[in-house]
Amino acid sequence: MSRLYLLRHAKAGWALPGVRDFDRPLDASGLADAEKMGTAMRTRSYVPDLTLCSNARRARETLEGLAGQTDTGRVLFLDTLYSDDAAGYLAIIRGNGGPGSLLVIGHNPMMEDLAMAVAGGGDEAALATLNQGFPTSGLAVISFPGNLADAARGSGHLDAFLTPADP
Image: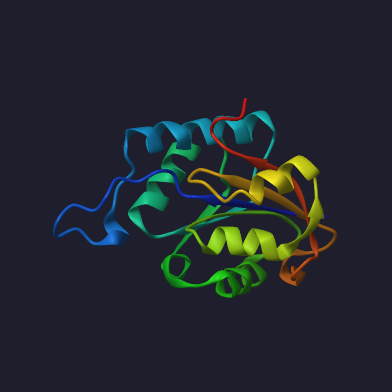
């Protein structure tokens, strides 16, 4: 069994004049939420073997907040997690997946589209929460019966969907 963690970056401030969207930093609530999600991951023993993180500033700062609270495994930064669509995200996961667990820190709508596509079923409460949208700092926990290199539409099980408001 393999596990995929999909984490949407924490809340970022609006871009200031002359600042690219790619370079937007987290705001104060986003910094706090990233730390909360790191604590939630540690408490639930959600520990990835590998983290793939968008190279956008808000995603990197989300990773920093997590890493202060829990182990994030080996980390790779990818510009393509800023620009690819859900199908591109799935290709990246397949290319870096294996047995074990993988955390992806990325952006919407790709995170929501991917979670909805690969989760063929799951915990009813988690599915209901995901169906309401994928908020900043939202974490989808999806298990697969085999290797993540073989992940496909409908082949995963949504085990949990967490937000910073969860205990």
